[in-house]
Image 1 (cartoon, helix red, strand yellow):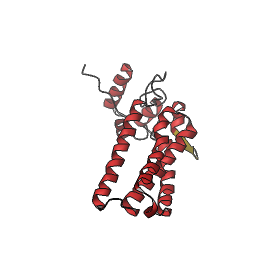
Image 2: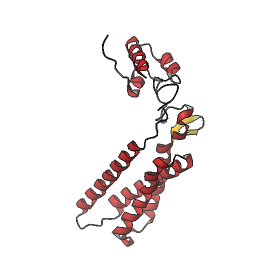
Image 3: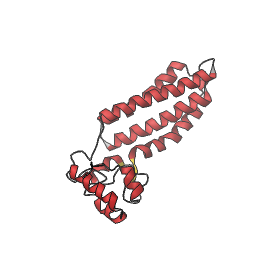
Image 4: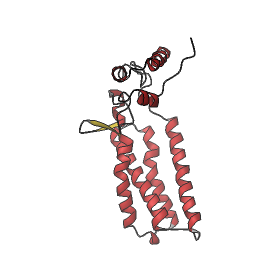
Length: 195
C-alpha cells in the first residue's frame, strides 16, 4: 500500500463540486463555525469579508470628504493606524459583534488609507516614492496582522468530535452525494483513518 495522501478543501471543491464550502461562506456552515458566518436570507456569508465589504465604501466616502491638504502626515499615520487596532485585538476577542465591528472598521480604514494615500494627497516631494511607501507600509501591516492571526487562529474543527472539514461526519453526506470518483474516495478514506 502506498503512502497516504491528504486531500485539501480545494481538491474536494474541484473533484466533487457542490460538496465543499458554499459560495461566499469561506467556512463550513456547521454550528461550530457559526461565529465565522453571517446568515443573510438563509445563505451563510463569511463574517470577515462581508463586514469589510460594508466598511470599504464608507472609507472611500470618508476619504473623499476630508480635505487632506489640511491633515499633517503624523495625523494621517496615527488616524489610519488606530483603525487597524480593533482588527489586531480581534483574535483575542471572539465575540461576534466585535468581529463584525473590527472588520468593518478595517475595511473603512483600508479604503481611506488607499484613497487618501494614492489619490487625494502626496506627502513627499517625490510622488512615486510616496506611493511606494504607502503600498509597502500596507503590505508590512497586512503581513504583521496575518502572522498574528496565524498565532492566535481560532479553528473550530480542532478537537471536533465529528472530525475535520472537509472529511468530517457533518460534510460527508455532501461528499458522498457529489462525488463518484473512486480514486478520490480512496484518498478521503485514507485521510479519515489518520484523523
